[in-house]
Image (cartoon, rainbow, N blue to C red):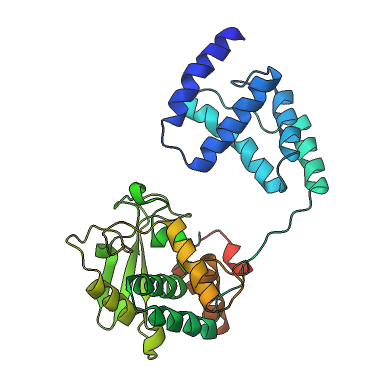
Length: 302
């Protein structure tokens, strides 16, 4: 056991250098801290250890789905370390997860969708700002709505973590006569370059909510020396991060006298999908436009 502990101590440092997602690192730290605290073997654990870990998680997490994700993180940790993956189908663990599912009652907090009328209100408020921030925010809400984009398709998670091979750049915006199209190189459902999506952004008759006019106005106000720069960039030349865009969106909601707890950036994606469905667009076209997985029915919840 001591040899395994020494090996895992050395190997787990290598696992965190793989550039794993922040959520994965949180899961790894939680599991390793649990095993260290109770003196349990973390690498190649006993089935009872995983079952006890699930019980431990139920004391601090409110959703049974989150617990299942943390349990899956144990297997992912072993894969990063090149160790045999522990079995996650033991009788003890399955029984424990069933009990947790019945005990924890979790309801997903859904944000309200942005309606066409509300989109006009938001776009008008952006115009009233009459500065670079207003122009950036207007492009973000119009692209997010008409493109049904996730926030990760609009900007990188951090200013210093922009990756032109993954995140949307200025050169990924293609002019097609009077409309636009966005090349989506990475998304939640497509994390390789094998399945690049081309999302059309239509031209609208109402200039207030016309994404083509808003984009042309933004690139005129904030020109760049390279097309390989982020889609949304400040006047000073720094990328707009997801956190910064969220704060800007909250200020916009406040300006429009809307509840900041009822709407988020994801409301744009929901609003675009809902409006398309109400306009008799087929579910297949909505799923393709929004970049949902072909086997997924998640878009039906919108």
